[in-house]
Image (tube, rainbow, N blue to C red; front, side, top):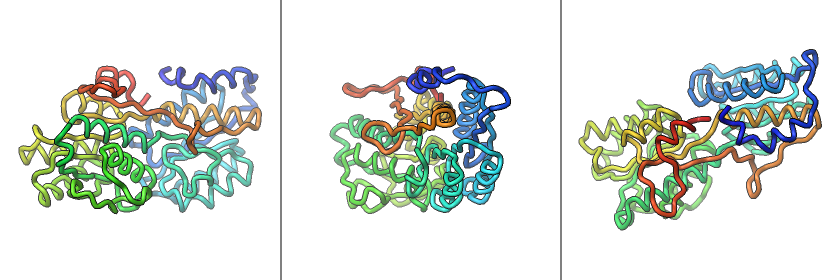
Length: 339
């Protein structure tokens, strides 16, 4: 399996633990925002592979739609009642779900947030996530270097997620700006910068249709946009369609975050200049293994050095490599995408 190399440290510790008998299977719950988004499909795949390998009983739940906190709360209650040892959750509402998380931890469950930290972050025992700030910095630095002297006069469109300013959205946005060389003010807010190179910000809901609409809106405001940052690759694909309709695809640089296989294909096809790849399959697999270890030893996972979460990795994917930048090609990216 692709994620084994990334799990070496945890795998070594788990190998010292005797496998559980069938009757003593550890119950672990995975709760995602939806069951259709490919990112969360990969999470389920990684969690199931690792649970099968360790002889665990994985039970999966999801919201009916992105933002469905009620379904996630019900899933937590079900897992508490079933005697689960731990919960992995990609929270739809990082604030509203916290009281249910508190009840789970009081009942003795280990709770790990996946991808999106809770608010406050220490409401979970640990967070396993992409370093979203670093992901933004990588594409920001690459874009500035790619433009060279033209970066000083860039006209940048920022295509964000939504108006809620969740941590993932803010971290990617602020990381891109920092990487590009733009001063940010409050690192926990989107849109308070005053650099004239930022010609506008809009929201996409992380969807292709939203990306197209947002790009159309911003082109009306400033037809000369030549750099587009997007929260994810579906939004980038939509932005490209709007630029194509305006005859602007040849002189606009698009950068994004996610590293899903369709997004890597768009790097290969020249739709996206560079993207930062994250690893949801590895993320969920590492979480399952951490709960296995907790169930057998009581040990909780430690954050990565210098961070307040467990970093599950990020890679810059581009077919336009630059000196001084560690990156992988789209060909390599197709072997890695969402592994």
